[in-house]
Amino acid sequence: MSKKAKAVTATIKLVINAGQAKPAPPVGPALGQAGLNIMNFCKDFNAKTADIKAEAPVPVVITAYSDKTFTYVTKTPPTTYFLKKAAGLESGSQRPGHQSVATISAKHVYEIAKVKQQDSKDVPLESMCRNIVGTCRSMGIKVVGSLEAPAS
Image (cartoon, rainbow, N blue to C red):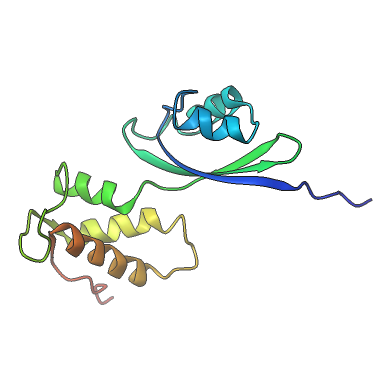
């Protein structure tokens, strides 16, 4: 008894604020073009992200199939969102590398890395921390403290 695989007709990538999917653009047109039920997606996405802060941008990858069904995967908010929250910023530096706009501790970097690791479980935490420090640099945020794990 073999199950026939459904043909994928589209892969749609969107960033929607948690709990705020609406049939309006960008969600409506993107799903409408693929012939998907927009309200079903909005209701399901809003229910799934209800426990996340309302203004948190949630990347979502929607896979549309030929029979007009869909599946979707939500990811954690972008690293820049977490860094701006941790540093209390509206935006990063206009001149990163020349101008530092905020300072965060290595503990913040570690905590953000633990959350982001949910998206890429095969990436070591140490590498994730290094990536986040690089993002800090590109935003003009200074990281204070050591990223070395404390000796046990």
